[in-house]
Length: 282
Image 1: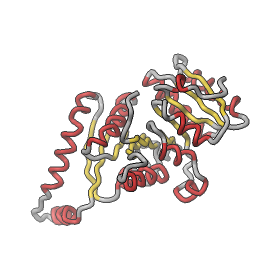
Image 2: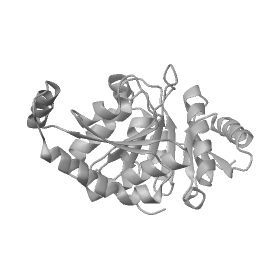
Image 3: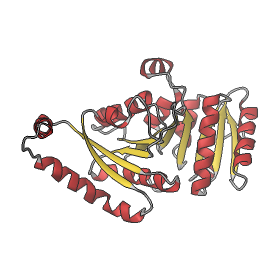
Image 4: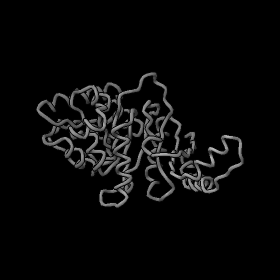
């Protein structure tokens, strides 16, 4: 059991935070499975007075579930949010649990999941409790056709591939003319919206290379009218994983896309992955 985090041990690994709660246990299960699927090392991190025993238990459980998994544990002191943000500079992926407190309570309590997903240098997965009914629809990613969105879509493709799940790309738009055209068509009137078809074609072209790279992934492209966070994170859940991008904190676009990522993390009833849109190679 290590008492500090060594960047050499974190490099290209899946890092999961545990605190002995059922929420952290769920995150550790997800992280161990993902590390096993991607053939990466799993680093279990616990912060606090009982950190050593908590980390030991999580390491033992990960090895029990995945005997061939390379896994180690660290018990460290400090603010868990800062510990994980620092670790994200070297990790391939950071995984945290979520108590599903809701937007207001979570913000007031300064939740680890909200803070880490908003500031981490690598993708962060926030594991939610499973929804009732167990009806899952695969992976959904909210993105557009800009070059900045490519790492987000690629991340979604990769996880859909290793987990053998279908992938749906959702792009939202806010255009009153298009909505009116759709309304008229629904009433049997002749209507068209060439701008929307052009958008669909652009999105399909931007993902064509990834479709060739991951031929095993069943891919669907969907255009929806409305707000992005509501379109990709319905209140009833239904997705195995929601993937959303996040601009760097220094970017003016962070005002919009950052708020979307935060809203999805706070409100979604499915597990959420937040992917920085300027990823370094790992």
